[in-house]
Amino acid sequence: MSQRRGLLIILSSPSGAGKSTLAKRLRAWDPEIGFSVSATTRAPRPGEEHGREYFFHGHDEFRDMVAESALLEHAEVFGNFYGTPKAPVVAALESGRDILLDIDWQGGQQVRNSLRAEDVVSIFVLPPSIAELERRLNSRGQDSDEVIAGRMKRSRDEISHWAEYDYVLVNEDIDTAEAEVQAIVTAERLKRIRRPGLTAFVRGLNTEFEERL
Image 1 (cartoon, rainbow, N blue to C red):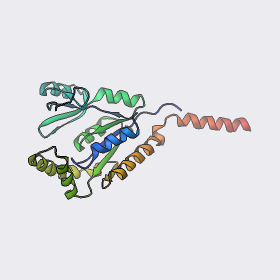
Image 2 (image 1 turned 45 degrees about the vertical axis):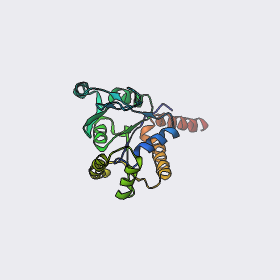
Image 3 (image 1 turned 90 degrees about the horizontal axis):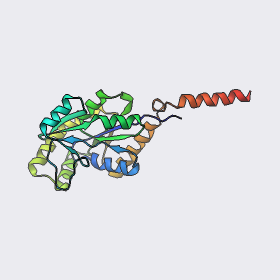
Image 4 (image 1 turned 90 degrees about the vertical axis):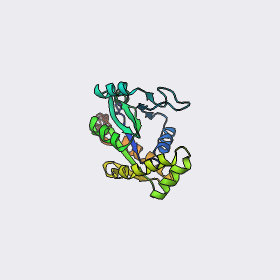
């Protein structure tokens, strides 16, 4: 059968609900799933490299990319801009490779409006409770109290967009959530609409029937 187009898998959640962990686990489960490296205007953190964690750009350069429609999506998050370069994602999908995007609801909306709908599989991850979400943010030890308060405030708006997604998971247990994401990807890969070679394959089966007559 001919090669299918790839899936564009969107993972979104409020900060601390577990999407980044699930993204890493999904790629460990299937290393063939590509991960889209985002562009950003924020400064690199220690140990980060241009083109590995992010493509780091100045504000003017980022604005030029937006004006040239070189990004599938872009959004401002905590004072910095983030976006998904379009060309490598489209090339991967057309070659049959699945691509994973770890983006927020704003980016998810833009991506769904910029590509063929059948390419996109969107998954939203919810925390089991708001108290647990706050506990997870604090346990990371990465952010100040002020930053955590900002993330908690933003999370209410993010959660309000859950119904825009194809699938919604409650990440109470990370192993269970991982298994659910794997099941979603497996099922989506097998959908008839994504397997263009099936028509010719079934024709071949019918030909075999006719040859037996």
